[in-house]
Amino acid sequence: MGLLLLIAVFVFFGVALILLAFVGLRNNLVRERNELGKAWTNVDQLLKQRRDELPRLIGTCRSYLTSETGVFDFIAAARSVEQKAVPAEKARAAAELTQALNRLFAVADRNRELSLDTSYRQLKKQLLILEERINAEMERFRAQANAYNARLRGFAGGLAGRAAGLRQQPTPTVPPNSQN
Image (cartoon, rainbow, N blue to C red; front, top):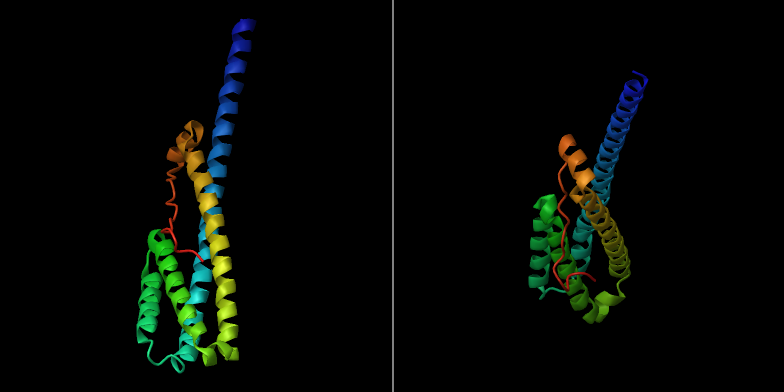
């Protein structure tokens, strides 16, 4: 009887330990998913901040670059696509807007009067700083998404994730040659 009781106690504590580990893993995965959501919110806020600065930049450039309507149309179209894009497509749309901005900067910098305009230089500096922050936050998000997805692909993480209804998160990809 004593041996049977000892085995039952070990089995009970073994099952309890496994359940506690499972619950802990599930809670960690939920926490990581929530942190991933916060990381994407940071990216999205920076993208919105950049979109909000564009009308000022275009207004400043338009008076100097009257013959360059194609560049402005390209930026307006890219801005509109990025604004309406769902999160899974937002990285590609943001990269296209970055390309449009780089095109505008290239054209604007060839115009001597505009390149000397204080307002243009300040706006360009602000937008370039925003671009750096967007790239850094996007890389941070990708790293977190890759780590989260890797944990869900593991055996224990997969079991805990499925039990909690967690799914892998899409990792935004950027087309080649689209970053600064």
